[in-house]
Length: 291
Image (cartoon, helix red, strand yellow):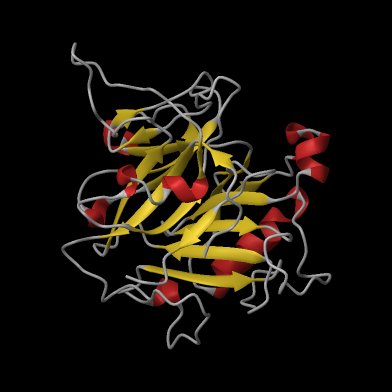
């Protein structure tokens, strides 16, 4: 599935590990009645579903949700950035090339830089956004190589560490992490609304336009059990959405309602950290129905 395809700068990508193939991935976009709660399933890797603003699964839900286990050996991760050349390439002097160009979301999930070990993305979310000079703003690191902007030390970012799959960690914080292995895959973000389990309504921090007018939301959250929730709320993306009191655009004071509902209903634990990605005019979420 695609949501809006506007200009973007970097996306967080999930691929299927070559070692594991596709057997552990439920790649159906349709919600299914699980025999076990995902967080209680030792084999759980990733799942996509729609939910209302209470975090309940709902076929016509406004919230497009991906939940996944960063420690799953069936998954691998990278960050893709809008570049005019291949990721990680160096110039004649041996320095990393960083020639940024704006790309649409669908370009970033389909160009050559989106593959990992020959595998196409199974899921992706829009993360950082570009400035007027077509450069990134936040902290973006793709498998250890940095492509960052002026606010890389000020704005929080979302990341998945390197290391063996069973030792991977998801993190959200401002600037580079103290432990270098945590800086393996990072994407810049916007407002941070959970810190160490405490929720904050960040409407005032975002300003009136981002809080009340540009209400398409793109976000990530991490639970105390290490699971990740990716969510896009976009009322204009799908005409089949059933808009009602529990299924409408999200305001910042309601972020906790939907995320805590998703975590609770899927046995993922309690929300510890939460961050807004590039939303407003260009949220983007992709889940590959064919693996």
